[in-house]
Each structure stands twice: as C-alpha cells, then as structure tokens.
Image 1 (cartoon, rainbow, N blue to C red):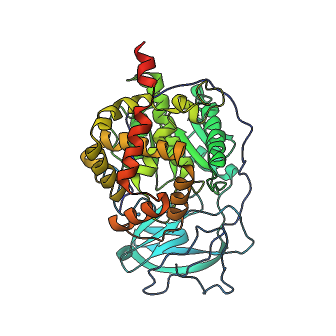
Image 2: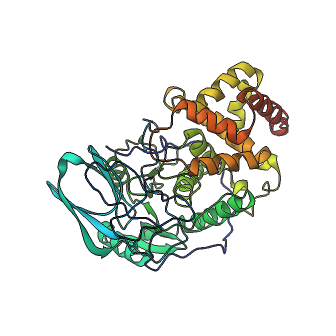
Image 3: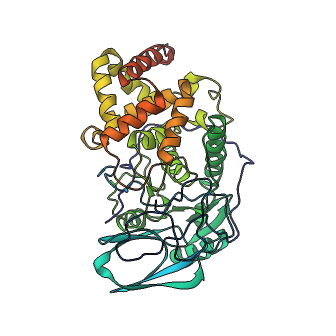
Length: 434
C-alpha cells in the first residue's frame, strides 16, 4: 500500500511576514531510546502496541506485550505511523529483522496481521510490507534507537551528493542546494518556536520529536516530483512542497517560476511544515485515523504569520490572525445556515468533501479549526486529547460525530450558528474595502 500525501500540494494564496529567530530549540543529536513496549510478531497477532500515552506498563520479558491509516487525503491510513512519546525510558527493545523475497527490512513492528505488517526503521521511515513477500523473520540482539542528527546528516549526504549542503537547525536536518543553503532555515526555526508557543498557550500536549525533522529542498523539479512519486504522491507541476508520511519528510522545490507570488509559496511551505511538526510533536495521533478537517484546518490556519510570528503586527488580535483568502471564500456560507450546518456535519463525519469539493473542504476546515482555537480552546483541547487516545483502525462516521459532540459539548447546529455570528462580525472585509 502506498502512502498518499496529506493534501494536494499546490500554490495557494497566503501571506509572508517579518522574520524573527526564536530561541526555543530542541537539539536532537544523541542516540535515544523510544518509550515503546516491544510487540513480538507471533502467528496471527493483529494488535498494535499502545505507544501514545505518557506512561506505560512496560514488558518485563522480551516476549510479553500489551494489546492495544482519502485519495486527496486518505481513507484508512492517515496514521499508520507511531506517535512516539518523548519521555524516554531506559528499557531496550530488540530490532525485528524481516527477510523478504527481495531484500531485508529491519526495525520496530508497529502493526502485524496475516495480510501485511508495518515496520518503523531507525530513520523514522515506515515500511508497509505485504505478508506474502515475507520469507521469515527473527529478533536480533541489537537495540532499537532512533538515528541522531549527525547520523541523519551523514545519510542525506550519501543520498543527495555533494551538490547539497546538509545542516542541523535545531531539531531539523535541512538539505538544500549549496547555492541556496540558507533559504528556509530561519523560517523553519521560526515555525518550530511559534508552533510550540501556540501549543503551550492553548495547553496542547506536545512532545519533543524523537526523530530528526528532515526537510529537503531539491535543486530541480524532476528530482522533487520523483521523490514524491516514489511514495505514491502525484504532484501537479506547480507544486512547491509536500509532506511525505512514509518517510516523514517535508520536500520542497521553490526555485521555479513563482505562480501566485512569493507569499503563496511561503504559505504552502508553511502548510506542509506544520504537518511535519504536528505529526512529530503529538498534536495528531500517529497510530489512529485523524479527521482531515482538523489536520488540514490547523495547517491552513498557520499559513497566517500572526499565528506563529512574534514580529507580526496582527498577532495580538483575532482579526490579525484571520486567513484573508479563506475568510472571503467563507462569506457565501454565512448567509445559508442550513447549508453550513449540513456541510459541517458531513465534514466532521467523513473526509469525502476533500475529494468531492476540495476548496469548500479547506475553507470549512480552516473556519472550524480557527473558531475553536479562538473561542472554544478548551473544547478543541478535549477533542485533540480524545483523538490522541484512539486505537489503530478505521474511524467510523458515528464515532467521529460522537467524539466531536462529547468534546465540544454542543450540537453541530448550534456550532454553525456560532460560526456565523463569529465570522459575520468580522470587520476585515469592511476594512479592506476602504
């Protein structure tokens, strides 16, 4: 099974903003051990270890364990990779070695049943393996440890060659053409600090990434598109960025003609970078399906510099944090309450709108996520907490509705009325008309 991209990457309207460097950095430069109970793969085992919590009853013996993934977006896959806890422990978990018909893969088993297995290797990459290709497997004596930043730099040098500069920037390992090696460093540092600050203010539980956050800016479009295709992502020619779930990388190509202008390119790069951060700091669960409206809504929200940049003049006001492009697209919805009510219900229950009405899906996802952040932060925090506790497997529409109602505490019809009052009261459109 190929892992599709989280969104259909394209240049869209967005905003640039003043730059400022944050001191809030978490260097990740030493081998560390994951807080994971090791799940051995006995015959017929089809459970996933609980690796999302803050504490665990870890196994006392090697073979004991606890039982515990849309085409624009995805259906059953969004989170087939692990949410790694950052409070690491001293227990050691052996590496599983799987011999295939053609080659060998090794790492930590995340999922295993009679049809396929999912293996996490030391680079953070997920390998989805057809069970029919497995010849045999064995536990090794080697201990699973995520690679360090230094090891990631060495690996990228081998992969990309001397034409690229590989640099550590806080928790990131950024590869870029030598001639433009500092192009995005400051922006990614600013995003990391701003994202963590925003999460802290809203009391979201965030974790320190256990794997280096890899960002690659390709020197030519062919390499960029080929890298995406290798993971099942078919990008349009105008794409400038994409987050790849299988390899847990953010890839960029921003040297071509800037259709839509630099601000739109900046917005797209920011959007994909937020996916990388959200799935590596625990905001989104990586072992259970996440509602796409929340995944895309938060990433779209952060396209506005005021949400993460201390130097942004609008950061202290709700109006300053509003996404101007999507606020304009939202306008027709505000005069049709029943239509908005029905659309929100559909968006909460399933991700179908992202394939049938993509622009509407992004518009409403931003509107819902931004409203909850601004006016109902406790309820949004409750929802994020509930989603982080979900188990591996499909997320049914009835379950999605029930979790949303429990966390938010009001019916969707009341929520849509609140959104109408909130956005209809915005003075942005009046101001820009002057």
